[in-house]
Length: 260
Image 1 (cartoon, rainbow, N blue to C red):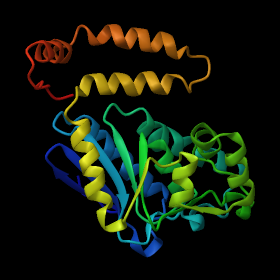
Image 2 (tube, rainbow, N blue to C red):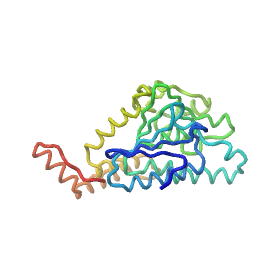
Image 3 (cartoon, rainbow, N blue to C red):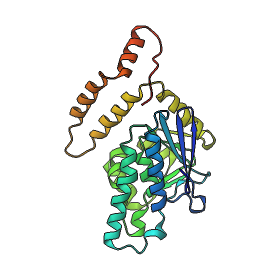
Image 4 (spheres, helix red, strand yellow):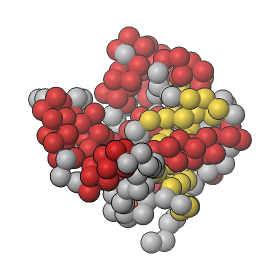
């Protein structure tokens, strides 16, 4: 598949996807959102890829936001449609992927960029990263899940302050708030993410996909996450990975899991 607004690197079970619009600080437009969806769908279906890292090209930005010029003259209906489609095909899609997705935040992650990072399963930031949801300064609110995922990650009060002030926080502030898991020098960011990916790949891909499903269930209205966990736990017992994992433990050797 030819890529116009992104770059893809594949190496030893890890797919690194670069959002590549440097002239726009990697801002998201509809075309880029669709391209990212199509690429991630193919990766998720590839049994050889066990971890995905999403980052931005260059050293200035992960994603500096949505491409405002694209929707500045939208009507109310068009605005709602923009948010609906974006959430469905990219942000909710990433959150529900069976392959673990790590956001490597290498600079500015603002508006839709921070929303993209929050849709990933967890986040690693470079020490120069700045994060924020500046939408209220434009007369609008976050529309790609920001008002929902930010409170889940850092709590209602902190999220309200970030959204209402439209301000940015540093990587260290984000770490203290629980928005990112680690802060590392920018030159070490991808190597650090790859190190975590290697640790993930030692474990059962099937079990990891079930864990993603169960954790996500806790944040879905009307869904009993404990019931989802019970069913996912039981389903694991019917897998070859469970047989291999328990057999390897009893035989005191490292397990050799199959692909996802």
